[in-house]
Image 1 (cartoon, rainbow, N blue to C red):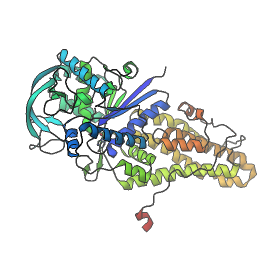
Image 2 (spheres, rainbow, N blue to C red):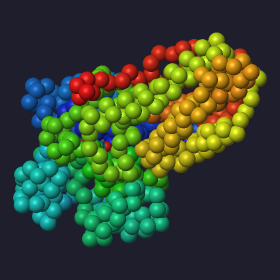
Image 3 (cartoon, rainbow, N blue to C red):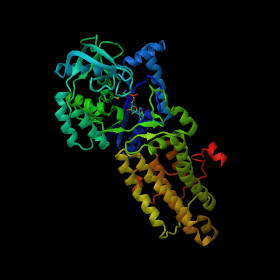
Image 4 (cartoon, protein in one colour):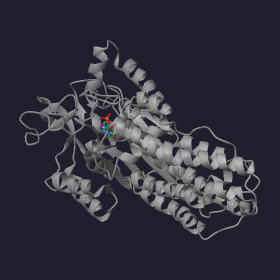
Length: 516
Ligand code: ME8
């Protein structure tokens, strides 16, 4: 039986349109899933929508809609966006799904029955747009420390989760599992800023609004935000609900991919909730940085967002996927710029990769009518290219497993660059002139084709369409499109016909370039 790999994204708020920040996380999770599936894992990926809460209630009201009608409409749009972005998610979890709601009610009851949740009174500062409670010491000049907008003092009866009870166990887990929180810097922040100073009990119900999962044994309360949202990773697998039970198959998650804005909830509240439920903890929570615009963080509530549908329409889905994964580095913040995106398309995609494919295909067609002869003469010059091609998959996989897409792609582009250089070094057009050199020419074309096969298999998880197009242009048989097939260079079969191919990535002409 195949080993499993379970990867998740946050479930996003549908209160306004999703932007390239959400697209980044989802593309990243999809790429991990595709890569693991390529390696032979039973890979499972979920994403979803966080549909409850006061903010959704308000937005729906402003639009003159019921909250349910509003979230239904948004969910359909989000599903479209992920389809456009070629996201191969196994489920799109919605917190309004009846099965998810069952899970939440049963978790709440279980935690209440065992004494981890108790009834008390909530008094404190509340930021409505962020749906966050803050203590006196956390607010900054009377404003929300996250978004800088005014907070309101609230007081109401509420249920609380005893966080502090599990703090020591959590700290020990984090300290004994070095990969649990990544990148490293986020781990230190969690330990020093949140866990060590002491955890406060978490407010887990509200009575001031009703758009949420009702607490079934005390229905004037609705379950409050994090305890409704986080268990989506379990409700997807049928935990305490009536969906097919896939807990044993997929839990614990291999990686929860999240932005740094919600790493605290995923590395503190979530593991504590799991401990209370007596469930194993996920292997890793990876908190990536933010995509910033020149002026600061892109955010739905600030309204300065970059629309992925527009970008994909203008530059292509694969180009956008590549740009996002290549430019975001080391889990740090990255600044979005259309100019950089265009540069990546023109240099990495059109110039380096696209030209390599079109030259290779065109030369094979011109010199050998598309069929590389079996009689091939190797030369010393080949070994460097072959070695690099053979070594690259391992380097690539090492970075992919560290969620370091940028370096993984850099490794592939080293191979692409080396392959282009090989064309310059071997000068196929000169070899072609003398028939006695044709067996040498055959070896050159063969090595180019193999190097491109390796490249295509590796880029496939990042750019599914591009990977497939390259493999199809080179008529690579299915059996040589697998990860395992990259173990040995030189498997490309004889008597396969290569055709001239369409341009992979058209160059983007900009006004600046036209002026030159
Ligand atoms: O927080 N750069 O939903 P949300 C990079 N519902 N990533 C970004 C980003 C940016 N500028 N902006 C958003 C919620 N993201 C909760 C989550 S999970 C159980 C509940 C991505 O719609 C990033 O993954 O505010 C971030 O963590 C997430 O979207 C926040 O989405």
